[in-house]
Length: 382
Image (cartoon, rainbow, N blue to C red):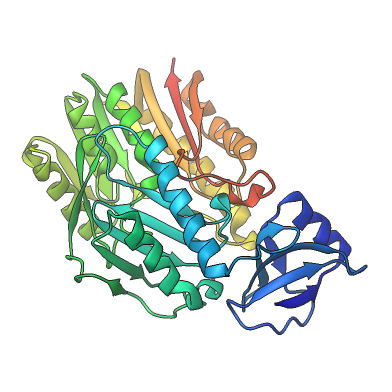
C-alpha cells in the first residue's frame, strides 16, 4: 500500500473525519489505488483510495487500513449499507438511495434502488477498478436483477447514457412505488440516476397538506409533487416546467396512478416568467434546480431565489401554503431562509411552519458540512 504525506492541517481534518484530501502536492498514485495517509511528522492518520481530480484521495477511514483484502472490506461495507436501508425505509416503497457517498463513508460512490434495478453512479475515478466488487455485493444483497451504471459525470466517464454491468438491459421506463404512489423512472436519461429520490418524504408531506386545496407545482420535472397532491385530495393541480418532455412524463405519472390528466392543468413555461392565473393558489410548490454550481454563481443565485419568492408570494392565497425548496449546496440554510424571507416580505405576513433537509437514506457525515445541500420549508401566508 502506498503512503502519501499530507500537510498537518489536512491531516487534522482527516482525523476529524473529513472525507477529502485535495491535490495540493504532486501525488502520483493511480486512481483506485489503496493509500495510507501520514502527516508531515510521518504519523499515520488515515487511509483511502487515490483519485485523479482536484480531490487526490477519497478517505475511507481513520488510522490504519483494515488488514483484510479491500474487496472483502468493500463488499461487507456495501451490504451493511443495504441492510440499514431496510430498517429505515418504511411503507410501500422500493425506490431509495442505498449508498450516499460521503454520508456512508464511501466518498464519490452513489447507488440507488429502483425496484429490481440497481443504478450505480461514480463521481470519482477511484471506484472504477472496484466495479466488479460493487456488482458482487449487489448480487449478494438479493434484490437487484440488473446492475446498471449511469454515465454523465464528465471528469469520470465523459459520456452520457449508461451501461449494464450485470443482468438484462433495463427498460427505457421503470415504474417504482413511493409510499404507494407509482412513479416513472428513466434510468438512461432521467435526472440524477432517474428520479429525485431526496424529495421522497417531502412528496409524502405534500400529500398530507393538499386535501381540498388548489395547487401549483413549479419546476415540476415529472410531476411527483403534483401526483402526491392529487392523491392527497387536491381539487386541482397546475404543473409547470420548462421541458416539454418533463410535462409529458408528468401526464404519464398521472395516468399510471389512475388520475385523468385532463382534470388538471399542465404548462410548458419558464417559471421565472410565469404569472399564474386570476385566482391565488392555496398550495404553491417551488422546487427549482440548483442555481449555483460554483462560487462565481453564488451572488446570482441569491438574487434569483429572492426574485423567485417575490414573484410567487402574491400567487399564494391568504392562509395558503408555500412549500419551497433549494438544492443549491453553496447556499446554507440560514442564508437561504433570509433570502426567502426577503423575497416574501412584500406580499404580507408569513410564518415558517416546517423546515427539513435530506431524508434518512441521504446521510451526511458530521465532519463533512459540504454534504448538506437540501433545504425544504413550509410557510403560511397569514
